[in-house]
Amino acid sequence: MDKTDIILVGAPVDCGKRSRGCIMGPDAYRTAGLSDALTELGHHVEDLGNVTLGALPDATHKNDALYKLAENVAWTTALSHAAMEAAPRGMPIFLGGDHALAAGTVAGMAAHAATIEKPLFVLWLDAHTDYHTLDSTTSGNIHGTPVGYFTGRDGFAPFPAVPAPVPPENICMIGLRSVDGAERAALDGTDMQLVDMRAIDEDGIVKPLSAFLDRVNAAGGILHVSLDVDFLDPAVAPAVGTTVPGGATVREAHLVMEMLHDAGCVCSLDLVELNPFLDERGRTASLMVELAASLMGRSVFDRPTHRYT
Image 1: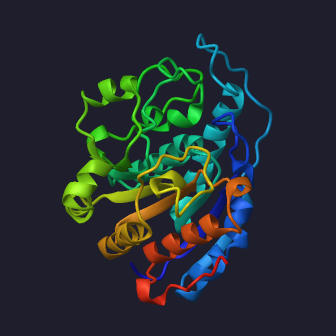
Image 2: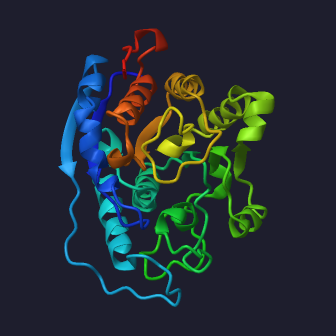
């Protein structure tokens, strides 16, 4: 990956679930030194600040469990526009914010990809598939629905129509270890590449990721990466409200980022579900910054050593 114009876009989305705290995520990444880390690698970094919302739309749905539907619709619209505006100027990094934000960021990047006539691929690094629809979610937490939305599944009104849905076969999910039955049944009918933690334990992380990246480059595609804090094991990244034991190690996560750097096809990045209220002296925010730096060219031997004692 050559030196890049990087555009930081704050997405303080905190309405995709009922637990609060992700609204502080964007500023935690800034405080942890994300801009400086990327600048030191030779990239030009522009911080656009945080996206803000205007008036909320009228939004209703038959599923009474849905939480803050109007706010989620508004964020999806705003972040889709933000992605479409930022992508022609460089590589957007969206600082979250809960994972509901990906409904907007991926939809916007897919629209951008359509304008430049390249297929968009998505690497979903997460413990969860987030493939629910507004009808199928029983929790009502809309951060469990963005993949369902940007792949064009039915049942998302009153959300805006997705102008360029991402084909499921263009998606790879790595790190899965918590998937609801309704999501599993829906995924069975797709060609999505699904890599759970058992597969990683048995065969490693390199082979499935290499196969996916080869497909991206063979198609002349561009790749959006959505990195959820809960992709990582909570022992190393505690600042997330959806902890699931058995996640990726620090070394596995860095290996993924280094492979993405080598592939040279990443066009945009989500950093999501960081809840600083749950962190331990900033250790999770710092780790996520280090992973972003690995994606942008920092080798593992150049990583600074942190002390938490």
